[in-house]
Length: 242
Image (cartoon, rainbow, N blue to C red; front, side, top):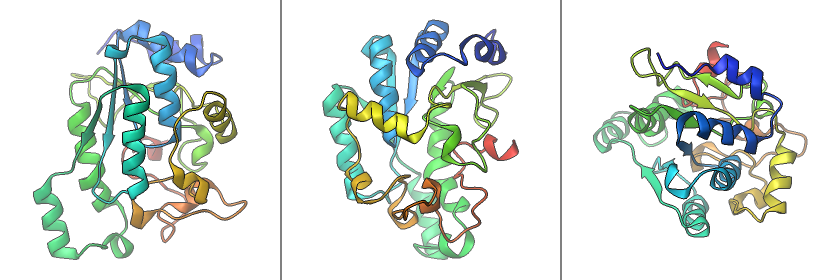
């Protein structure tokens, strides 16, 4: 197991700003790898590039094959805005073909989203994280009261890491609210997905995402046909065990 101690990191940095948390994470590991899909993640990219050399900040995104057209344009805008490489990862074509051939294109409406997400998101993420020492995510405690309300700024990732290959997971925005994220975006002119202007708050695959109504929680726009208590796709499955 790595000598890094997440509990000690939390004790020392839990009251720090996200920028300070990222700076401390970079000091501990000498690199930062950020998974990018939404508004929070671009804030992390913006902050990371202020505390670490560009060549030490790695960014990747998961292309499920079912994203909105606006999301694809958003990925390109972020790439150009920051002048960075974005490692776009794709699901296994044979696994997708087998699922669609057996159950059709929209089996998740009937069977639940976990099987489809497992192929389109979790498997490519597992492949990308293999061997990495550090992973930075945009998780916030207020994103999903049922699964993320105890997210720590640093933890061991038990889903994608192991004793032989430990993976430190950092969530620098854990204590931020959605309002704080958007204040930062507007203050520093950070790129964002235009779907946000049309009522989409939490944005995933096109068939599984819809705008939220006033006073609805942001995760109610994801997998709305399922139980409201476990809105996770498997990328952060450790949250469900909490």
